[in-house]
Length: 305
Image 1 (cartoon, one colour):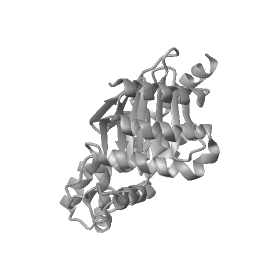
Image 2 (cartoon, helix red, strand yellow):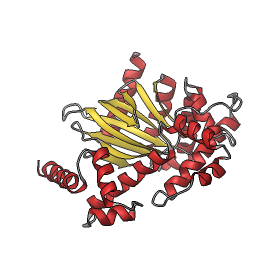
Image 3 (cartoon, one colour):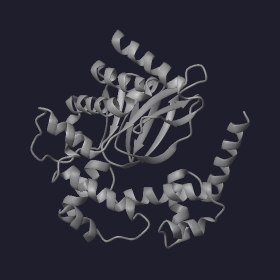
Image 4 (spheres, helix red, strand yellow):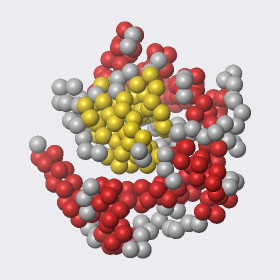
């Protein structure tokens, strides 16, 4: 990495530490900007990545999207261009050198606005590409991110400048080696755009059974084309995508409410508690009751340290 990037990362690290009093994800006065700090290696965390950019300035992380594995650290950034159910784990962190990162969320309309205002040449309709990628951080991108983060020191500037700096950040991403994958999410009629509509439908209706014909109609594709492009974008089939959403929500409900596994299974759309238990164990490594007990004990230990 260049000396310029080292200085920019050091500046960001100080900003993140100053605004992160404890481990976890921290919201900021800039609605789309989040800081993340972890002082130890974490358990795998399951969740849905919204369209966003994540930059690590210290430590290392691994993200699993189905069978795809993305490992990144200082000098790298990761982008998700659509909502994706993932597993993330901080794999390098300590109390002396905590994992420090920031996330900037964005929308397809923001991407389209940048494309419309710039001279970036939008290519013709292309085959869908994976909606998650890792790239090397360029000084020009990091410079815009530093300026956005520094607005927290001058909150009166946020209403005017935050959107401008965010637009510059998206412009730099679109100029990068994977910019084509990002632009396709915003171009109406592209395969990625249409798969995005299917993803939105599944996320809103993950707890009910759907027919493939519903998804075909939303995407305006044949059955075979839908399956191919959906897997190109998400690394999984629509059914696998729905299953991940169901199991993630089931785990959240079991952790946050005093309820039994059979009740949760029905609430997230399973008709068979035994099938739910099998698939839960396959995804999380333990049956529901054992998994929740284990997680609560780990949480208690962490609080009492």
